[in-house]
Every structure is written in structure tokens, then in C-alpha cells.
Length: 227
Image 1 (spheres, one colour):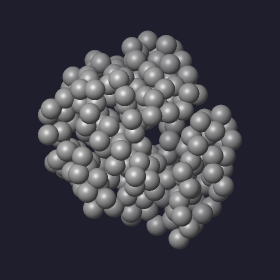
Image 2 (cartoon, one colour; image 1 turned 120 degrees about the vertical axis):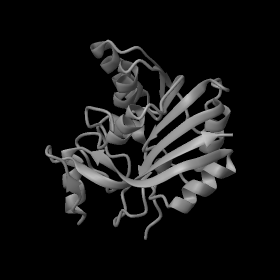
Image 3 (cartoon, rainbow, N blue to C red; image 1 turned 90 degrees about the vertical axis):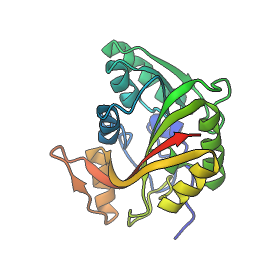
């Protein structure tokens, strides 16, 4: 299999192809609402305190959490994504603090958060970046903080340009090596737009879909606690 190429997500938000082979006319994960796994995490009462949406993209998860009464900060490395998120928050009356930031660093956020949401960020990072990311999340949280991750799993049968498929062992090694204890790890799904679903169909991957034609990519849903 060819080596995965890291994507320039700012380029994608600006409407261009971030890597060869990734041609979308919409941002694939921008489904116009929160990811179902994030809704489930929140619905079980597991989200509390100061919340970080790491790699918040256009802000749908952050806006949902703010509407549920949580204090939310959203960060993303793509300035255009943050512009979109701020505008959507203004349009919907959601109070969310946003910043352009590198999630593998998070300088200035030491011991700030009680809950972290990662919706398809872990799988955008190579091995060295994942180690720095897990350590940065640990620094940015208080003892006992909770981490929720949804990422592409190694059950995905085709290569997706710009992202990495993640094994359960990679999750355990990376997180536990940075001071996180995994309390739950289960197979789940990550929802992508109908347009993205057509892209995957053309690549030979026929995904389960919802009633709006959006595809469900195989994913892990991970819950962890900071030591």
C-alpha cells in the first residue's frame, strides 16, 4: 500500500484538493450537524466541565455541545475552518471560544480542560504526531479529565487519501504511553457527506448509508481518563 500523505486541510476548506486523489466539492466530514458518536457521548452525561473540541473544523460538534450548556473551546489548524465555525456560532447564537492552534502543541492551555472531544483528528496524524498529540492533550487537561475519540479504524478496506487507519493496538499504545487510561473501545461509525460517499463508492467501497445518502465509515469510539 502506498504511504499515506498528510493532508493540508486549509486547502480543503478553501475548495481545492489537499492531496492527490482527494477530490471533493464539499468538506467530507462537514455533515451540517454533530457526529452521532459525539451526541451519544454527551447524551450519556459523560461530557462535563470545560470542554475542548480538538480539531473542531466548521464547529458542528462545538456548537451542539454549547447548545447543551457546556463551556466549549474549539481549536483547529485551518484558519478557514475557524472562520466558518465562528460564523455558524454567531448565526445560531452559540457561545464558543475559537482559536487557530496546532493540536500537537496546545501551548497556553495547560490544565485548562475537563473533557476533550476528538472527532476524526487522531487519524489525520502520523505516528510521531500522534505521540505529541496525546501528550499535548494530557498537558491541556486536569487530573481525571475524560477524552473521547472517534477515528477511522483499520476495518476500512481501502486507503483514504490524507488520513491513516488506526488499529486498537495503536490507540492503546499511544494513549496509555501519554498518561491516558482507556476505559472503553468499541467499533462505531463516522458519518460523511453524500458527496463523499459517492467518492468512496467510485473507489470500490460501498458504505452503509443513512436515509440522506451519507456514508458510515468504520471507526473506533474511544473513551479514556487522564491519570
